[in-house]
Length: 355
Image (cartoon, rainbow, N blue to C red; front, side):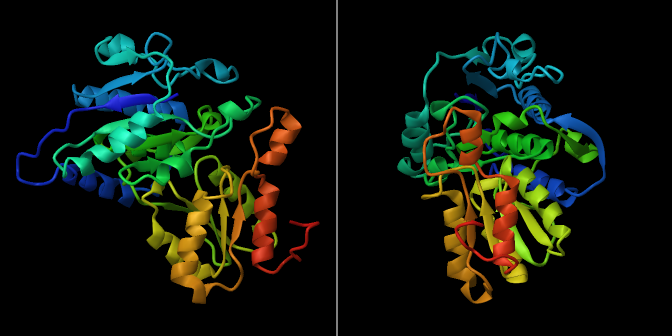
């Protein structure tokens, strides 16, 4: 279920476009992206603070969604081993029922695809739809096929939508604040299993003006032997795989996509031209996936730079099993990423027994 954040577009008073203040803030944030971390915060704390600050700064911002008000977020009971900070904690009490609205249980994909994504185009640019559809994306744990949907590739195939998938607390906070300020519809895909994860953040990230630009990926780890792209929870898997590969004298460059639509094709292409190899990692289905789009783009633009076939690591092409042992087999694991990188670097034979 998606929480919905919407706000009225504030017209520029100086003749500039509404996106200019966002761009300036985003550029400043990007420049301080690698500053020294000073504090650990959870992803759900980062989301909560971003919502709170944007609602405080703009009285036209409001929150709608299933269980976002009285219950303070549908996922607060899932994390019993960590301090309780639901994503929408305290917002109803602070901003009241006119700005934090509990909605019936419903699915919103028709409103996203047929209304939000197309209204600006169909109105010849006269009507903006400044709305953020945010909520969990991807498999959780032991919830079966119907609650393990990975919808990043669905939404990213739709023109008119911007699609973001944060990994860390910095991603969650900076991207959500930018999404709320953006004049266009944004789908903000959060991984439920990351809500309780803590990440180091800098003082700049905690500043109320901090934003991250849409469409810009981040190099989480530099390397020269193979490029690994990932988003959301799979960034952590890619980083763990890179640590293992480093012990084998293989330097992997790990790219955190952050933005699924638009993709930072320039950064990906530049990385592949340096490493000459590519491995994409995602939890979604292999057919028509995000990795498939990246591989096609890289082959189209960098074929002469590739020293090995591109490798795609994805979830199984089947509905998610309920049993824990089968669920693990259906999802990418760190060792899968390691084996793919070894194959790309000719450190193993690509046979059925090692694939």
